[in-house]
Image (cartoon, rainbow, N blue to C red; front, side):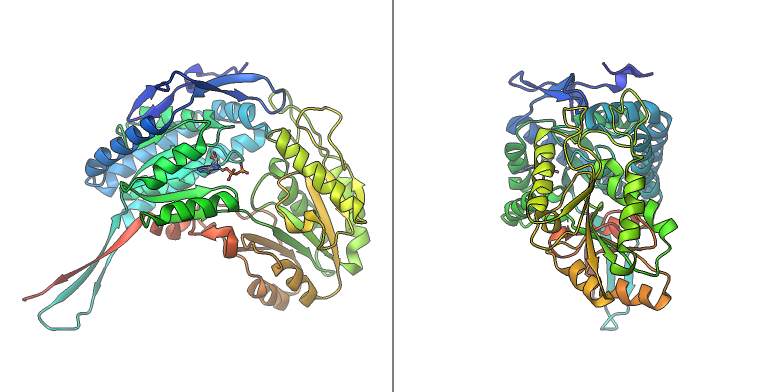
Length: 485
Ligand code: ADP
């Protein structure tokens, strides 16, 4: 049971063209609380036809939405932002119920998610162009920025709110319209956002949410459509690659926020009093289920044992439980498959000689809960070293030199976030420049904010979300030549 101050935020219908709709075939999908397995709601199982209707509505809405002034759009987005903040507590309860994360983290995500709407409501007014000095006296060169058009977003379950607002806020601010397909596990946060967008007065068709348990079918409808001019995806690298292939046929623009394999490097000269809490936050936030979570902890040999001991003492303090019912630092994993994968990765490391120094197995609470875990003495042949863990498991590597640390850190096909801790200012520059990552945090474990560009290099993706750079992902450049002057 979900108890909200405003029960009308619990929506069990999809939102298409400003209407709350059921599936044409009448089918629904259950939404489960991952902490208990209990069904908390159902949402419609939309398919091709309803997705096509959402695309058609977005195409119609685009014609008038793009003609509004940036300020007119900004006023509506600002209202939406204020409604989200005013309903923060209910949105957090909904999120924890469907996703499992601690209430404080859910509330934090709601505020973080809303911050993108606030920020782009302002920045949308600054989609400036250029007047370029001409190559001929009788000609003028004008460059303007135009909204790309109808866009689509496919989003994951780990941040059910913010992964949506990061995409739709810049899109809507500059005049694009958007169809969103949220993750099957977490549609309720997306639908609650739509209820608030509706109350804010965002016109029908400007933004729609298509719920489904047929992501391949709905995804293909979006990528095959010549009307959809851009796809923004956050999720796993294999699905991202598949969607890029699908987008090739209509030469769509894409933004891809894909997997990571973040190194967190602690040098001998680091301030451990600061590095340890930062490494806890970076690893165990959202039970380790974020694409920028520290995935590999690289510890220089002079402090390796001390770090391991002190880190284990902090990990032992993390309380695990059902976050809908109490204050815990660790919720469940999203589903059984996630739990099994994490357990198999730990077993693989142990079989190859690694040492478990905290946790190491499914939690005695049962269900989808896993113990906050540290595995020491990791080597590069272990799955924990090569794959995105997406769970509360910290693998510790030992290294000797700075060169070795950088080499290990870069030895991956991914390039999203990297972290390192040192008090040597020259090393700050040397290492941050040597790391092949889209984002580097020095002496900090958290780097997401709406004012900075979030995104990766290599197989972690393309494009940026947040900041003035994030707006470019939804704009086309038009060059106009005025001749005969
Ligand atoms: P995760 O492993 O985090 O669940 P996925 O990449 O599988 O990551 O899922 C992220 C999003 O992509 C979800 O909304 C999911 O429904 C969607 N998705 C998964 N496979 C496809 C596909 N083949 N086509 C379109 N969307 C997909």
